[in-house]
Image (cartoon, rainbow, N blue to C red; front, side, top):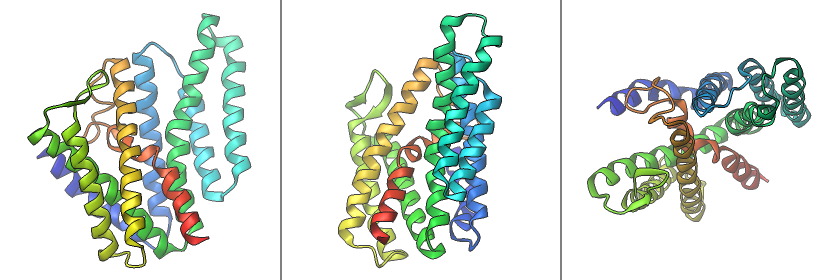
Length: 267
């Protein structure tokens, strides 16, 4: 019930952001999700014993997102390279143990790559595509992912018998994964006939299969990070869901995919 109520409260605001004529509502969601998700990533790292430079990470994440908004690849790349240089240079004066400089600098940079760069592609899609087309693509994107996640959760709870990846996530089952694939395909077909009639059926099904497969990998990757930090959830911000990373784990690796598809579709 907590999962459902959280979704019911947030969903209208999120749908409005997707379909609003101004891109800034969606950008606000992405910026907030990035900073909160990055906070959770650095917390996971610290629980695993690796300190990060949070201030530099947050600042670079904002620079990276601004680079996506400006469609400026040099700004994005420059921000990432500057982050790496600064984390290493500052360690000359702040590091207590030099053998930890490399992994802790890597953690700071990895958080920005994992959260900010991935989510930045959602901003890039929105600002580089005509508003209505962007709304259709992003709505289909989130519909496929959320339907797959929801179907996997409930089918797994009801019918799950065979473990999918017990070493990483004992709760996930093969039956749940299959239910997730079916949920994504049905959602993609529903979205095609509901608000995206120009989308070929083959594209809808293909997108559903690709996004669901990558989403399940992203889910397992986040589960691996949590297991390495000995935490059940990345955070507690969203009742019934956990933290931002728990909700966005299927989105992160998929955001570049939907942007690439948008370029291929519109080329």
